[in-house]
Length: 340
Image 1 (spheres, helix red, strand yellow):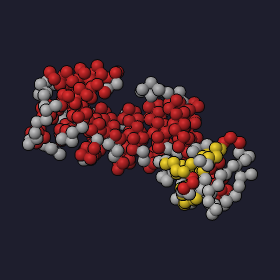
Image 2 (tube, helix red, strand yellow):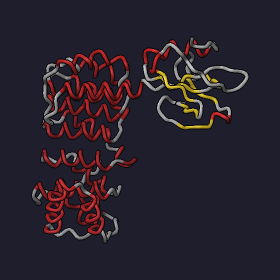
Image 3 (cartoon, helix red, strand yellow):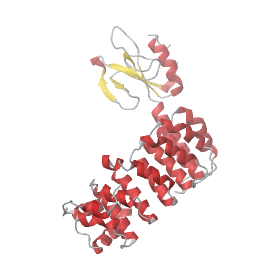
Image 4 (tube, rainbow, N blue to C red):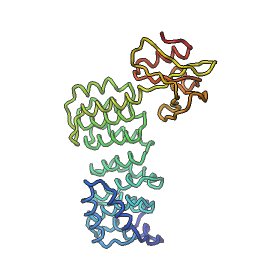
């Protein structure tokens, strides 16, 4: 940790041109945010900030108004210069609650390898006495992609002694991390007494969950009348989560072993739930990414998880839009059987 403000700016060259960059950032902002951002930039100008060195010092000057210091942290994060991380790290330990929270959010918005060095400091802020700071720390851990802190964030989300706003933010951060290890805790949170927590647990499971969560999410979608802080209904978010999970689970690649080369499969008796395709082959080598290849090249498709994870098949393609049929189809097709 850096102990003195002077350590931050020592030996750093002045960097003219920051206002051109800040104006570019302003022009790229959505219209709803421009008025506030423009007012913030005017605030910085009135504070006499002309160069990067001055901006870097701004959050650390306790004689300045808190608003000015926090705007300085925001501007540093938007300029995305790694030197700004040093000032943010100092500000994480400021005696002023609002400054600590602004520093945590700035680190999350900054991102990058240098900002990742702040993860231990952010974890320590999960015990900060101020809710605003704990919530900002949770946000930053999520946006920084602190996968090593899944357990810490899950603990916050499940803590009945924590405020519901912080718990909900922790569930949202787990969605950002996209780690399946968080799913058991998130499933339990679907029946939490707090609508805020249920909402963000449903959101997170929509991002990283699987078919295991569908039954519980259907229950919320059909009967949860709770409302989150953002004004949205828990039932609506649960319905959207179901749709996101199904969109990941229902399109699968089914391939058959055929020593004579590629051949089309025209299954019958399964209605319009199958869409046979022979013009191209889509491979899902990791279950997520896709690449389309010409079947005439005799490419190999990976059938992930069914029936042998990672097994290669020379094949034609069927995209399955009903997940309940997947296992049946793979079993039949990998035995080389037709589907009559």
